[in-house]
Image (cartoon, rainbow, N blue to C red; front, side, top):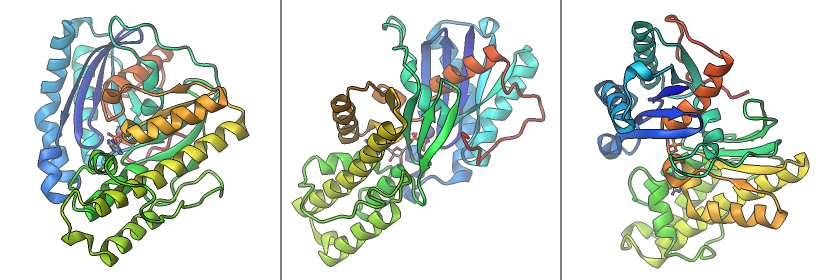
Length: 342
Ligand code: KG4
Ligand code: ZN
């Protein structure tokens, strides 16, 4: 079944063509340049940029796959969670296109789609590993830090979540404090690579206290050290600044991986999933790999390009939903900005 996926939940306008487990094309148009000077995503600017781009990315996804709209059997669109004005763009585009072309439209949960992103493949690549369930999924992005137990591809239960900032939000806010600009995750990772993670003592929030996360106190501690040591006056790549970035990254990674380990042990899950924008972080990938390897459990993690927001993952989950006749939207369907996975 050929599925056109559409995504506009935050600051990426994306479209992808997907068939039988394989991503035929994945077009992502980012908006970083529009939001950078504000230090974060401005919802109104995001919505307008999505409006300008949504038809173009859809046409490009079809062209790159060498397929026509007449061949598409169904549409999959992010229905939530996300910024409401941003969500509405792809949602209304999908509803209009579905209505005019007589195609079913399924509404996809963006976070659930991240969790399933390790199981889709590029053309010509070997088929995706068939996981043994249950799995524990750690989904870490700009808006979410969640631990789920997946009984199968579609059955999720919540094990833990952040009580304040999401992991990616903590990276972005800390990067802003360090004057690294927006978006911050990648910039922190680059600076941290040159720093000593033990240069400063930083807390491990909620260490061994259940499976919830908390990152806002860590960010505040970074600010306190930054001001106390007068790091603003130092060159951008000064060892003290690099040490602070490395210490922050190490604290986040250690907490995330330790909670993932505990979740695996307490649930007896057969393997782990690591997904979402923060899963692009090399230190996190390496630490999660080492931990799961030590446990003799497989780790499923998407390639770097599919960690960040994309429409391939929306089409991937949407294809399952379309086949099952699940969450088929009518023209009255609304965006679900706070849609929980469970
Ligand atoms: O999944 P995503 O593209 O959007 C949301 O659904 O939120 O995730 C974006 C988040 C941002 O907070 C960004 O700073 C973070 O992922 N991120 C990273 C890295 N690359 C992106 N965080 C840490 N290290 C990275 N290399
Ligand atoms: Zn996302």
